[in-house]
Image (cartoon, rainbow, N blue to C red):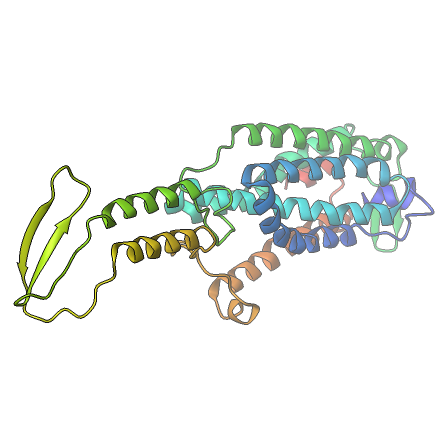
Length: 329
């Protein structure tokens, strides 16, 4: 990419450095992770994954044309690309947590570490297509080396397009195979308000009313109470001895009304389930070990990606002239 910006997109792109593109790509992941919660509430977990797939693929395919004309446009697309990747990661974590809660750490490490392993194969394929004859760098700008051969530079946009098509195909297969975990509802993963079934509440109200028809008709006669049961073909009277004086008991009508009002209020009020953790404030987040684990992940992996992608070839090609061998090691 640096060689393409230096010689094929000259003079509009000569001062561009791909480290800015990758930095914007990583920065875009922050708002992308925050957008995931909103998207899951509106679309559901699986549809959010499909949405991020289309955004990622369209952005990557669009950059194959934009990078030939504008560095600024390419930078903007990489910003959207980072957001789409962050949404995909967030959805993947939710699905992994739903399907394998006991092995969540293992599968999360697989999801985050697999791109690094895959890059070994990916770099070999890209190098084999872009530089099939294993040409050496022939241009020096300061302490850096670049490829200026047209047969190499002309393949860069096509490579980006092929990579976008391949990525779309793999993500499409993944989205088709994904099903929502039985223990994790699409909306429960981020929402703290569980769905309230109106039919269930009305059914409970009906059952409670039937139970309430077994009322008590109490008369204080020698510390005895008469229990009168309704709702059957024959009335049953039973005398119950008590040790304390009765003062007041609500009537059947009042009891039914109270139950009805409580059930109606249940249609509009919900209580957060205990299984869903609370949402932390920023001041609380920085006090948790999870925050520093995520921070360490970002520093070690993501910014390590910037250093590797931008400098290893520019530096190593000064001493190792075999491009394919350098890509492998």
